[in-house]
Image (cartoon, rainbow, N blue to C red; front, side):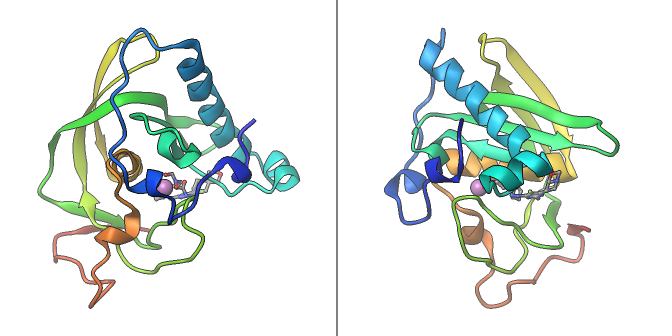
Length: 184
Ligand code: NB4
Ligand code: NI
């Protein structure tokens, strides 16, 4: 199973590289990695398992974070009472179109690969149209807004060597346009 020991930290050059596209059919090893990444997210969101293995909670995990420079990321967004809002492994994800309006989390962002707290808004597109492939090579297209859109943009950034704090305004970390949506 993947634990925090497998997750590389800021300073490791893999986190700053552009990850490679995957080709289909995926290898058994690539499929296994996908399952392991999703299992990490499930474990990290289970209070008992997370405590036992000292896992930080996560709603996303990108392959470069486990030192695999391939364009694959797992996303697991739970909703209220056992509902699941978004649960997919995204292979070769791309943002087809995006809103001009920006959105950010009121609390800012954290990253499993960044051990310090870095305050400030990470302003991202409030709406995106996302295209990706599943493990079997089937194409998916979905429109996402707010929280799921933010999570997927954080993950796609990892595939492009970008970390959340790159987006924080150095002079005024909590500056935002008047029409930006700040999500409590
Ligand atoms: C990715 C997120 C950082 C901001 C927003 C949030 C958490 C991460 C990083 C956008 C994407 C991981 C991957 C959380 C969390 C809310 C939902 C459900 C029950 C606990 C969980 C806690 F853990 N970020 N951590 N950071 N990353 N919300 N929640 N809750 O997920 O580095 O690249 O379980
Ligand atoms: Ni991250």
